Structure formats: C-alpha cells, structure tokens
Image (tube, rainbow, N blue to C red):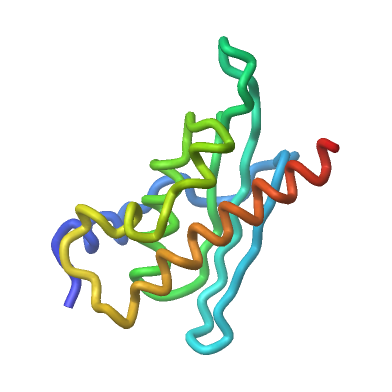
Length: 127
C-alpha cells in the first residue's frame, strides 16, 4: 500500500512537536478522516532582508500519509521565503515518495493548508 520511502519517513518523522513562542501557528483538520495538522513557524530575515522560515515543526494526529506529508512539508519549507513557501503545492509534497494511495492525496493538501494558515497567522500578528 505504501512505498518503502513513505514507511521510512513514518517510522522516523522529522520536525515533530510544538515550537515555543512560534511566530505563526496554523491548524487544519478533515472531519471526514479525522486528520488534524498543526504547523508552527519561526520567522527571521535572510541577508537580503526577506522574511524566511527559519524553524518549522508540526503536530500531526492522523494516518501514515498525514504524518509523512506533514514531515515532508517541514523539510521543504525550512529556509524558504514566505512567498516561496506559499507556492509549495500538494504535488510537491508527494513527489518522490513513491506510492501513496489516491484516497490519501488529501493529506498533502491538508499539510499545505496548515502551512498557509501558519503564514497567514504570522502576517496578521506582524501587521
């Protein structure tokens, strides 16, 4: 059902847990499947003065695909500008993972929605 790569990430997900004093927090859930994802971000500026995601973590309550996609998302978003992070698409999350059942693709959608919500939360607090 799942590829070896998916199972490897599931057994050792990265960037799990809350970030104290996060600059932005985004929470999304899917009532149909019960998955809930919470993304925490810390923002700093790079040498060009652009806001970047300097730290990111997640708390995910859900299935294998939910945990894996949220872990992969954190790896893809770290170090990106907010504009670059907002462009991360669900297909970017599942690309290279091997087999994920089509009915689990929504997990990658949830993870990007949680990231977008965290960025929006940061921008609201910063303005």
